Image (spheres, rainbow, N blue to C red):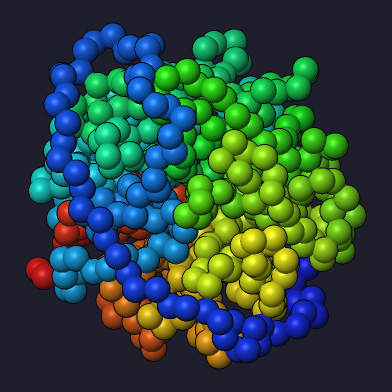
Length: 493
């Protein structure tokens, strides 16, 4: 779990060689148009507890690859590269509108079906008109947890409601959101709601706490990692609260979109404690076969420094089958103490590769098939890499957010660190050959040229922004979640 401290940096590692990635095949970007909207009814005042049914719930649902008209999940695409083909021009950015939603938006706003959808720490979910920012519909998941430090024993988000980025099924036009819901007396549960993008009508409502061992309590879990959608399931990952109080394990659970929930689960650190799956807010990556890739943090309490962490699946990248059975794992042998390999999410690269970087400031390139190590590169960021890296296939470069400042360029073709882009520390995205990132908590939005690293423009967001904030795009807008709602920008002004 992330803390203010970080593990020792600068351990000696073999530098990533250009030859190690010589087999990379740069794939052309692709987009998929959205299907026509299904017929929907208006939202009722009483949420439905029923689940939709399916004539063939065993048939896997294809992973969607959206264009910029549908930014449907964290970093837009299942491989979590955060890169999309450019749509409307975002040059000469001007503020389009600001929506005060009465709570902080920690996740990326998502865009689908002609709506901007955001969820707040007050457990409010809203759909906004992209032209005006006006609320089209609003829904509540229930009361958020308050006085978090006293109730849970630690934590730095208060109130605590929806912290992760939602995900949208663009075929059914349903948005899925998970919130921490207080039921009084310090009791909480984690609630998954599926809402019609068009109307806000509840089409799925399910408690999605993991199958906790006896004596463990969901109040010690933080649902920070963003949601993933694949194989006809919604996948939800858990870590611990800031400070690692209580007894907890990292988890991924999955429930079906239709029919019976058929909850499946993966538990990290089953032979100990910890192994948080929080990923700096990033989502599990999903490959074309529907397998998932997650990264984990250290065991709890902190193991000795220097590594390796002795607990199973701690400080690891784990490849999971659609029913969340471990298929392969990679452990950072140099990660001990609070080094957190899981400080960002795995990113799937062309050529069957995976990238991950943690608080040891070492980036690892792994084979997807068995998570064996292909190459390493040290010295990334010089401070904790926090949040999901972005990948630009045109330049064959990764852009890694650095908590203490800057976005670190990793030049895969040359096999070396590139320029560190100053003025931003949030998880970046790539739009048509330019890199966008936010400086938190101050709230400055920057655009960089992906090839040269030159600053193209900077704009104030107009509000402070949460930790690990990452912009999103769609409907001709650039969107940023803030401590009070959503700020939207439009190009060409």
